[in-house]
Image 1 (cartoon, rainbow, N blue to C red):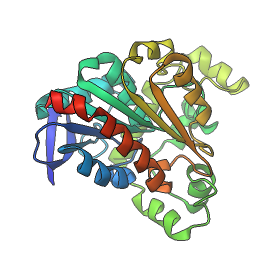
Image 2: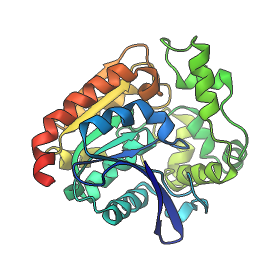
Image 3: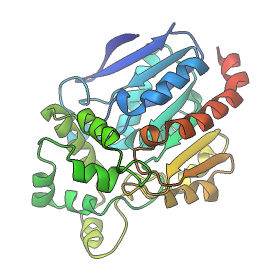
Amino acid sequence: MRVRAVGIDRYKLRVTTWGSGAAPHAIVLPGLSADARALAPQIRMLRRQVTTVHVIDLPGMALPPSLVQQDASFPQLADYVAHVAQELGVQRAVVVGHSLGGGVALHLALRRPELVEGLVLLAPAALGRSLHWIYKLYCLPLIGRALLYPRPTGQRGFVRRFLVGSLRRDDNAFVNMLIRHGNKARQRALSSRAIVWANQPAWWRRFLMVLTPGGEQVAFAVGDRLKQLSEVPTLVLWGNEDRVICAGDAIRCRDFHERAEIHVARGVGHMLPLEAPTWTNSYIARFVSSLRPALSEAA
């Protein structure tokens, strides 16, 4: 394993690499305020499927300084990932993203299609319209600032109620592990807040969101641009009890992406990669195997 920092503009992005550095490559993008631990079973599996696996932490999530709002839009985050890939010498890769990382992966594929050999999206942002209702409060000036103020996170009730599905909700060891993974660093909290605020809807949409359901993702959802990815092999995996990003958003893939393979796990919540690792890995391994001829050609 090799850990390095790749600089761009004012930021340094942490990259953790397993393997020789040669193709074929996989790029792994964790979710908001998460790191490689949230995708550890998938990283172990990918190390058996490809030659090199890179986990890229977004600006401010692992190394200082904190990300600021003007640099935190989804397209900008995708450009940071593309810059890192170029610095690593990655020309083509399977891109695996969970939650926020899945949304960044979608924007990366739209902006740099030549880089993406295949997409693995695990409960991704940027496909639909809605997020958990508390996101509406994040968008309100004073209330949002108070809720997003850096503080210890990972309370047991929150994890059980919002992050975990019924299959693992009463698994105390599993819930305690998720709580231990919670990062309390001020730098990461401020970077997460910058991402939330940079990708809010226009002010008038924010007002409407308080009165009507949905609309939290309209500022960064890819919408009908998903049709542009119709030739990109795509695997979408979700938990049917996801309370953060509704699994119903997978319907957009069926509507706009003819090559998308979609599977939904029962009794599983937003922490799908850890809640159902065997189920998740079985689909990813088969998907990556189907890409091997193209990956070998790229190598």
